[in-house]
Image 1 (cartoon, rainbow, N blue to C red):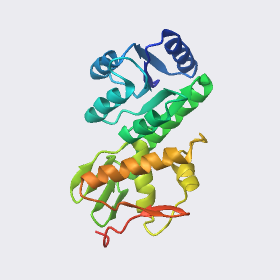
Image 2: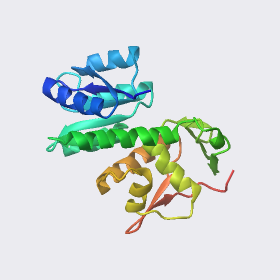
Image 3: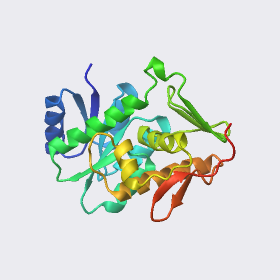
Length: 235
């Protein structure tokens, strides 16, 4: 069954180029011309992933992302102009999974869509052999089969990529991971991302856990990388 991809952009030419590339890759794209139509289609039809332009008039991509994240964890690949670096960072902090800058290569866009879908599939509760794969450390619990993160009993809603990063750190809480190691494991499909992208995801994870009462989930080891913070003894 082919993946359903919702393409959201106010430029008809860009929508056409993206849809052609996705169809060629065996996916089933649908389109929305603006943010309001995108939210309506997601409500009625759903999607496996959203390709979302940031710079749309009226309801822009960042606001659409906020509203999608209130409803669930549908993966989001942002489209942005090269000059919109701040918007790209904000988009990742809001829960976007990755971004492609305009003008873009359709081949690269399909590769990034495929990478996100593969990560989401690996994080989904589909495999029976993963049923016992629950990581606990202090007040932190990560239930991989159910794709559920909790701190002190409070659920923390994470994207597939955020969950993968936290799980990697929690499985070996004493180990410091460099940005390159995080990229290699979290982006396991040979798609290049920048250090700033990883930093944005780390910052987003910290904010989510801080809201749940955990101010020290991820510790920065300056000049080296990141490790799980001191959460107390294992549960």
